[in-house]
Amino acid sequence: MKIAILSRNPQLYSTKRLLEAIKEAGHEAIIVDHSICDLIIEQDGPSIIYKGTKLAGIDAIIPRIGASVTFYGTAVVRQFELMGAVSSVSSQAIVRSRDKLRSLQILSKAGLGMPKTAFTNFSKGGEKQLIEHVGGAPLIIKLLEGTQGLGVVLAETKKAGQSVIEAFHGLKARIIVQEFIKEAKGADIRAFIVNGKVVGAMKRQGAEGEFRSNLHRGGKATVIKLSRAERLAALGAAKALGLEVAGVDMLQSDRGPLILEVNSSPGLEGIEKATGINIAGEIIRFIEEKAKKNPSRRVNEQ
View 1 (cartoon, rainbow, N blue to C red):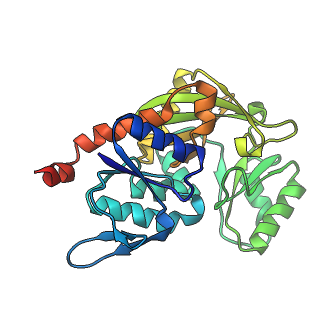
View 2 (tube, rainbow, N blue to C red):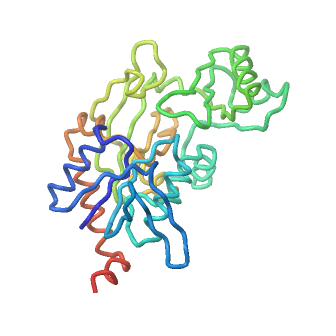
């Protein structure tokens, strides 16, 4: 098989590990910077021009689409899908998961546990009511476009919360407000899902004095064995969003696991180093299995 990794940076740990895993499995691997692909749409069918050459013979793709290029990146993934390539994550699932509000609405509909969340249109003077919707202070305020812990604020008092919400609204920035889960103690769980199975899990603890547990913010990761409830919550979240490869972030609370976010391009470095599991290899095995069932590939081989 010929497998393309869609990545803007070949030096990233995740990109390098996937490249290694593809070659170890005996397949041909290429790295394609999706941000510089030209999409050709015409009567003869869709095609992709990359660095002046038409891409052909791609059996499968592994999208590593950054949040800042979600629109164009998912357009490239969709083009590959229309050309008959299988994708480890569908373009539609990426779009669904990247919209934080939409994804939370879907998870809520599925009956999955989550911190109580409120969202409203810009309305001067409505800050106090928004805070009351999630049970008062302390509370978490998140930019809908934030990633890796950026754009996330802990407001310890109602007055501080009102000021932050007012400031974001003044900038016309879309935000959600969530209840603060005190008993989580600055830690969360990342469960890595591949093809309907939890293939690895880690607990991330925030740095001293830091409520965010992201590894990019100095958090530390350790391997963890999930409870049955945590496993079912992670699998349910990935399924609800249609993600076959996903990183599901959860908080441990007094009322059970609470879903924070479902990531469609989860990094491999933290989870592989914490668990010692070859996550990249699991993804390639899933791609192999998915490609065998792809009718487009069977037609091309005849």
